[in-house]
Length: 359
Image (tube, rainbow, N blue to C red; front, side, top):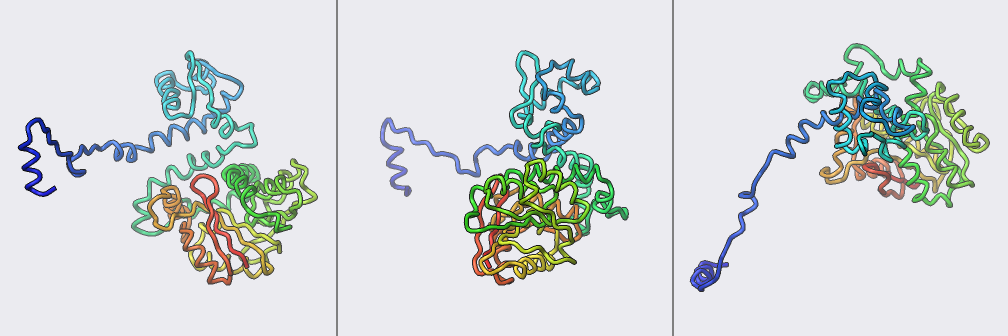
């Protein structure tokens, strides 16, 4: 509106001309900043609840505050605040003074259920939470901030401890379960007969694919200490005749041959030359028409929206010498450089996506 029309509007009797404030003049509050900056309060509350086995304690039914406090061995001072904070965070329900799991926490945070994903949260609580306190140092130095700072080797120790290795493998199954269900529904498995999961851990991915598609055979490839864990898990589903374990190291040993190779939560552990090496190795193993499926918390190409993927990449700074997460366009380019003739990106569960390359 020009000056003349504005003046005319002011001169008309009864007209009430109001001007909306420009965006820069609207109220600006620090709410989002404070919520994010103090977000570790909520995170540690959940992690402590998992550590205490709170959700497992409620698996058999609701408990009042005193019953739950005694069950967990908590001091009376802040137990009620702790429980009610979990209610406010959507992790517990409370009715008539009695606390109960939500549908999600009952399914995923009860240690007795095969769907338990708390193993990953237990590791986050015991390891990642304190290590992330050194993020600033990592940003300055580019060096890992985990056990490596003091000469330790988490995975070296892990593979020497059968109980911890089993818990870790179970956690890997939990965090990949959503992806497995989506992948089973959306990938054209009718066009393929065999599938091998590279870095299979307990075997959660190939089990879900085999259950959904009776014609599929294959298995998983991983380090030898995981063989008994894989075979026990696969056998519990009656799939031992269709899925086998292939022991080996994907750097020093040949990959097993299959129509489809899967690398889930593998590439982000490594620097760029190693990522390219693994993709090229998969390409060399596949027959023409074969497919490589890579999945991670793929960052959106504009690097604006998938905050989880970007934070996961910072976690790779904390945990690895050279690992980082990447965009779908990045991975497609690496696949094309390796020789794949077709590539595409498709969403999986939550913040995760897959990149598919066809040889």
